[in-house]
Amino acid sequence: GIQVEQSPPDLILQEGANSTLRCNFSDSVNNLQWFHQNPWGQLINLFYIPSGTKQNGRLSATTVATERYSLLYISSSQTTDSGVYFCAVPPPETSGSRLTFGEGTQLTVNP
Amino acid sequence: DTEVTQTPKHLVMGMTNKKSLKCEQHMGHRAMYWYKQKAKKPPELMFVYSYEKLSINESVPSRFSPECPNSSLLNLHLHALQPEDSALYLCASSPGEGAWLAAYNEQFFGPGTRLTVL
Image (tube, rainbow over the protein chains, first blue to last red):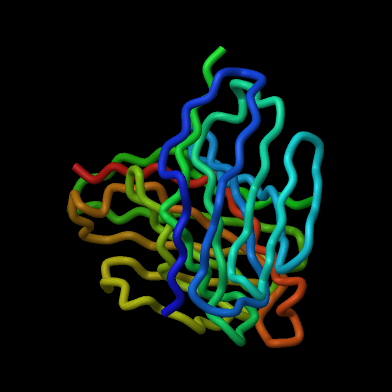
C-alpha cells in the first residue's frame, strides 16, 4: 500500500515563530488532506489539496504531486496551534475511501 | 454545514456489556466511515459504507458490528469488547465513492467517542 511519512515527528516553538511541516508519499495520489487534531481529539480539516497552493489565514499548504510531497506552513504560531498535524492520502487511482494517515507531527507552541 | 456529530462523547463499559456508538451527518454525503485511534497513533480505518451498503471491512473482529440505517446515520454496535479495544472512535463522511469524485472527496470527521473497556 501507499506509504506516508511526516516530518518532523515533534516540534516545539515559541509563540510567534513560523514552521514548516512536511508530508512525503510513495505513489501518485488524487487528493491529499491536512488535519489538525486538537487536545480533545477533534480532527479539524485544514486543507484538501491534491496539487498547488492554498492559503487560509496564517496557514498555507503546497502539494507538488509530481514529486510526491506536501508542505504545511504555519506563520506567527499561537498556543492554540498546538496539537497533532496529520496528512492523509487515498490509494492511487481511487476516489479516496481508504485514507492512509502519516504518523503525524506533534506541535507544541509555548507562550 | 460541515458537521458530523457523534454520541456519546465518552463511554465506559464492561467486557460483557452491549453498547452502541452513533454518528450523524446532514451534508448529503453518501459515504460514511468508522476509524479507531489509539493514543499517539494515527486513525486506522475500520469500515466504509457507500450508499448505505458496507463496502470495506478492514478485517475488524466481529465484536464490532456496523450498521447504516439511512444515508445520514451510522452506528457501531459493541459487544464482548476487550480492554485493548479502548480507544477514540471517529466517524467521518465524504460525498461518496467513485473515480468521478476523486477531486472532491474530502472527508469530514466527528469529534469522536472515547471508549474505555474495563
